[in-house]
Image (tube, rainbow, N blue to C red; front, side, top):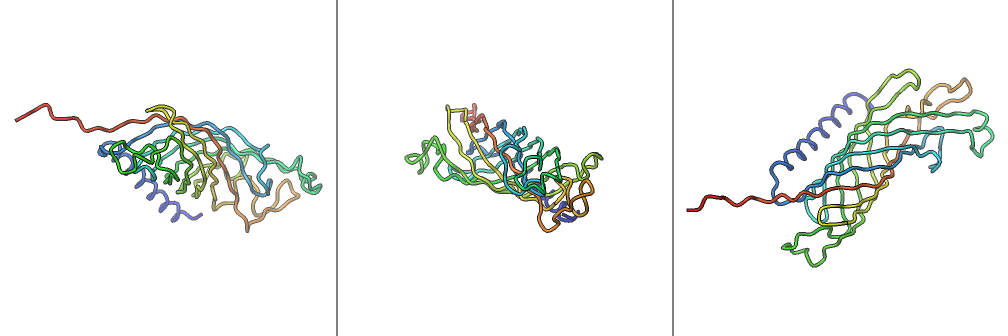
Length: 237
């Protein structure tokens, strides 16, 4: 990913976060949430062609969600964790002989939209109140900027763009507290997450420059809802 595209993605993210910030301060008819998430990251690339649950490593996130309607929400999030891959137990004997292994850190800022399949938390005085639900699955997609090491072991960092796409669920525990879960894949435009790209690895393998790496996050979230209500004037004519 070149610097021009990173700048464009950065400006887009800045605009989204600015919109979210203004919404927190000015929108009175919507519902706002702040939350935390715990889970794990996974990866696919040269050292793991297929998704392997054994490669999960810890991850976490903090987020803000603006519920624009019972079916649509915007979300801004900061997440961090690590990714891992290994060929030590690969079924292919050639891969086991290569013995590729890596661990890398990920930090990410993301702006996404969410589409709820059910009318989630519809206001009591709205037209959708009769079909409101305390539970809904949702689809999510957006854009992310992530930071990680390019050359493993050297500490050299690089910034790149990812496209998050995934599915999740939300459940209203109480009037204020919500439980959720999600699985989100990040399509990247780099082949450097595992340190294996064009060239050799341990002098006995080459990377596939035609396929970029992916990383994934699976987690459980807990969020708190704030209700924005206009205060009546204390002055009366």
